[in-house]
Each structure stands twice: as C-alpha cells, then as structure tokens.
Length: 122
Image (cartoon, rainbow, N blue to C red):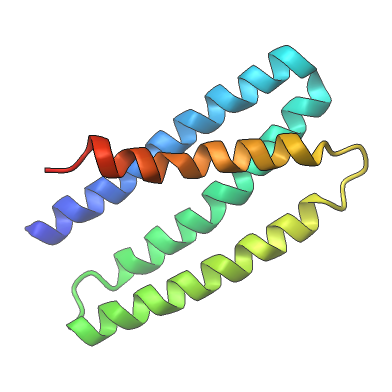
C-alpha cells in the first residue's frame, strides 16, 4: 500500500512539472514571442522527458525485491542523466534558440522538486 502512495506522489510531481511547463512556456511566449516560447518549451521538455523515463523505470520495479528496486533507481538515474545531456545537446543545435530562456525554463520545471519537499511532506 505504501508503494502505491509513493508512486502517486511521483506522478503528482510530474503533473505539477507539466503545469509549471505550461505556465512558463505561456509566459515566455506572451512576453518574448514565438522564439522565446519555443526555447522555453524545449527547456521544459529537457526537464520532463527524463523524469518521465525515471518514473516509468521505477514503476516497473515497484513489486521487486529491494535489490531490484535499487538497481532500477541506479539504472533509471543513469539513463535520466544521459538522456538529459543528449536532449540538451540536441536542443542547442536549433538555430535561433535563446539559451538563457531554455535554461530558465529548465530550472523552473526542476524547482518543482524543491518546492514539493517543503509543501508535500507528511
């Protein structure tokens, strides 16, 4: 039962990250136009896509023994870091990309983790 509650918390974080991505992308689009909106969307995607992979990987291992869960965390985190690096590499290849906007959107989506620690404890 506790596993399901922890997993629903993971999905709540991802849902909140998607909501933050929508807000950030809309804000940059409204202020800076379509180029800023695309840069923000890419930054949000670089943050969310690896997190979705990690959540899925851990979800698959939720009923395994402790060692299987630990291996899923290590494998998931390693692939998540590699995927993040690959997505950043692909994103900066796009002509006209605003790198500062991309990084700000990326940081805004990742900040959901930090705020979740304070707001959802208990």
